[in-house]
Amino acid sequence: MNKPDIRICFVGDSYVQGTGDDECLGWAGRLCASARRAGHNITYYNLGVRRDTSTDIARRWLAECEPRLLPDTENYVVFSFGANDASQVDGQQRVSDDDTLTNLRTLLDSASKRYRTLMVGPPPTVDDDHNTRLARLSERMQDVTIRLGVPYVATLPALIDDHIWRNEVRDNDGAHPHATGYARMARIVAASGAWWFGKQ
Amino acid sequence: MNKPDIRICFVGDSYVQGTGDDECLGWAGRLCASARRAGHNITYYNLGVRRDTSTDIARRWLAECEPRLLPDTENYVVFSFGANDASQVDGQQRVSDDDTLTNLRTLLDSASKRYRTLMVGPPPTVDDDHNTRLARLSERMQDVTIRLGVPYVATLPALIDDHIWRNEVRDNDGAHPHATGYARMARIVAASGAWWFGKQ
Image 1 (cartoon, rainbow over the protein chains, first blue to last red):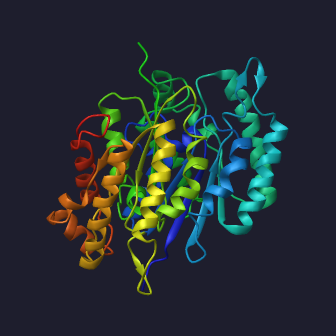
Image 2 (cartoon, each protein chain N blue to C red; image 1 turned 30 degrees about the vertical axis):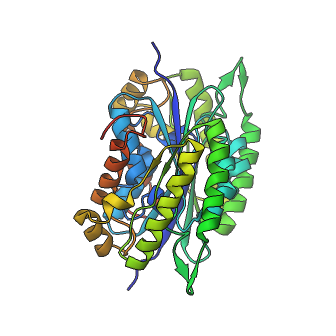
């Protein structure tokens, strides 16, 4: 029996890209490598872009996913963003919470009609004010996804008190961890039950 | 002194994507992980798409590279394709050699004006006829790149007699190796002198 030919696009920001990870896997690569080792025939497409907000992602996601997800393959999309939306430039939030939620609704509505879809919430940084905004945004994002019937994995509540995550982020650039932090985030996603291909 | 903020897009086909590699790195991920461990501040963007020919790549490469390569970062693009162009469907080659070379010329001309650019030639499969076509195409691609002043790394001549590459490709799907084969390919690119960030 042939195994299903699974294609997964991870669409999002620098955390999806795995910024700061010397192993060049991030949490998305670790999830896929682990699932491949468990026997799943997965093709891993990483479409994380540094500095991208939900507005940037709404603009590019479909044009980038379509050539990668074929009519005769089993297709999945995992979105993850929020940290750049909730960051401030010159005292101004880059994307308002309301606009983020509108983008999220539009994205997930369109994506979940085409592909099996999952949303992963933003992780914390070292900036307490940023984290307060992120925690509020993450909860509102979760409400939106529940109403659309798309699973949501919150990562901030588990990572905000995780010493490895905090230390790696602080020792790096204040936002991104190294390899071990990304491994923690991958485990949170896998353990949620929303990820389709087993625990880490 | 701050290290240069280096962004690299790898644009190409399934070999760029790393199809068949349970570690989800392929040759491109291995090159970047190795360079990061050596201290280079590299952001790794993998834009390999399975089944893509040079015609597909010509259509999408710039739209995908532009959001990833910023005005204030040090930007590199590595292209690699050819195996799908030279493959046959119903006795017909998917892209004629002449069209591949036209695509290559257009791509590299445009890319090398914007970014530091490198072309990596296609590796061999288990199909001798396919390899004969690929060897001829690879030589003609090299001629084009030399005329444009873009470095070219041929991989077929070294890999066609490489037992690990051949065995992994044969044991897998006839086209793609597993992890060790991709590690060999990464070493060939790094050892060529055309890769900017040191030997493997």
